[in-house]
Length: 258
Image (cartoon, rainbow, N blue to C red; front, side, top):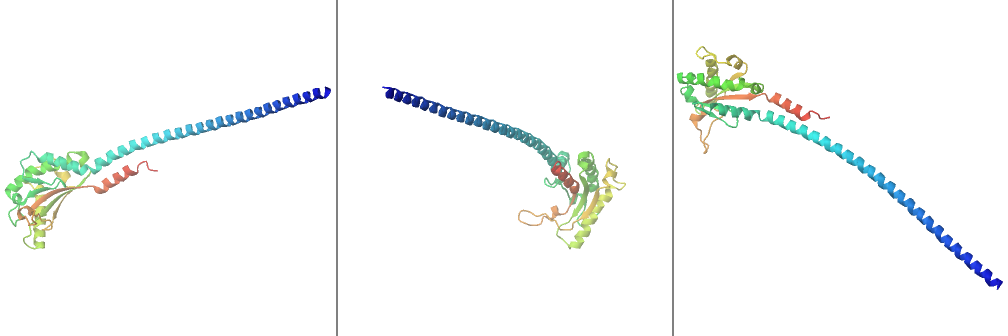
C-alpha cells in the first residue's frame, strides 16, 4: 500500500514537472517571438526613415529640375529672339514696302531687295538715269529707316551692301568693272548734292559699302536658261553681326553651367 502511494506521488510529481517544462518552453518561445516582433518593428521604422529621406531627396530633385526647366525656357526665348532676328527684319522689310508703289523684288528668305537694272541704268551704262535717281530718292530714306529707326535691329546690323550684277554677255572682267561702277555710283548719288537730306544719312555712312559681282550670280528660269533682264540688277542687302550673335548665344547656353 505504501509502495503504491509513493508511486502515485512520483507520477504526480513527474506530471507537474512536465507541465512546468512545457510552460517554460512556451515562455521562451513567446519571448523569442516578442524579440523578433520588436526587431521587425525596428526594421520597419528604419525602412520608414530611409523612405522619408528618399522622398525628401526626391522632392529636392524635383524642385531643382523645375528651376532648371524655368531657366531653359528663358534661354530658349532668348535664343529664339537672337536666331529669329534676321527673319524679324525680313518681315519688317516686307511690311514696310508692301504698300509702296515701288518696283522692287524682296527675297523672303534673305531679305535682299532687287532693283530692276532698267530702272537705274541704260544697257551697258553705269550712269544713273533721271528716273533712277527719282526712284532712289523715294527708296533710300524708307530703307534706311528700317535699320536705324529701331534700336533693337540696329545693334545687330553691321553692313548695308549695294551689290551690282550683270548678265552673261561679255567677259568676266568687263562685267566685273561695270557691276562695280554701277554699285559705287548708287552710293555716290546717295551722298551727292542731288539727293535730298534724309534722317539717317550720316549714320548710314558707317555701314554702307558697294560691291560688283560681275556675272557670277545669274538668274535662270525653270529650264536653266539665263534671264538676262533679271540678271542685270542692283541688290540692297543687310548683314548681321554674326560674331556678336554667336557670343550672345554662347552666353545664354552656358550661363549657370558649373
